[in-house]
Amino acid sequence: MNGPYKPGTPCWIDLMVPDQQAALDFYCDLFGWQGEVGPAEQGGYSVCTLKGKPVAGIMRAMNPDGTVPDPLPPTVWTTYLSTDSIDSTLKSVTDAGGTVMMGPVDVMDLGRMAVVADPAGAVFGLWEPGTFDGAGIVNEHGALIWNELTTSDLKGAAAFYSAILPVTTAVSGEPGSDGYVEFKAGGRAVGGMMDMSKLPPGVPPHWQPYFHVDSVDDVQAAAVRAGATVLAPAFDMVAGRMAVLADPQGGAFSIITATAPEDPA
Image (cartoon, helix red, strand yellow):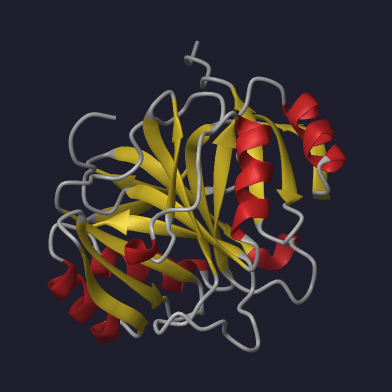
């Protein structure tokens, strides 16, 4: 990626975990990332890289004052949506029934961030870029390729995200997509949305990242050897072959070997 992401596009992901070093070891081994605990003045935040380009952040779960929260928050990946004005977007969030959970916060000269929740409770971040646009490499082995919202209210989610950012939603036209809804920014599909009725009871609304891999089966096996849990074993679907995993600390993510859409006959 060169240059800023269009507003409304997922541009960054990060993970908050109890054991930061263990998470760094797991993901670096699994995806070929490089990463180490960051400097104290940045709260130890680690920017993981692939081929020298930033791909994801990993941080230790802590309160703003540096103390360990009790109880610990759940281990989850946060998806950040790009915006060209975080202040106006936050106003739109509250006007549309969402909740501001943190921010806005200036991150040195890198940009401004906030964490919010949509009306159904799905948590996501907002990023207004300064000198840092977000992920510098995508759609390659070990890098982010897709972000997906699972929600209890498809219609409400479509209205909410379209109200806060310049995105539209539309049912995918791909054969076999079974009514899957796509988020589009600038006319291009940048994320997806599905009804959570297909998930086990008790799973809350959430955003989840997908990482592209050359072999889903090989990466799934490697993840299990490293202590991960398989939430949905490798299977074939319209967009390729995928699996859903949880890292050893419970952070859920998907891996996929994506196939290009077939050209219509």
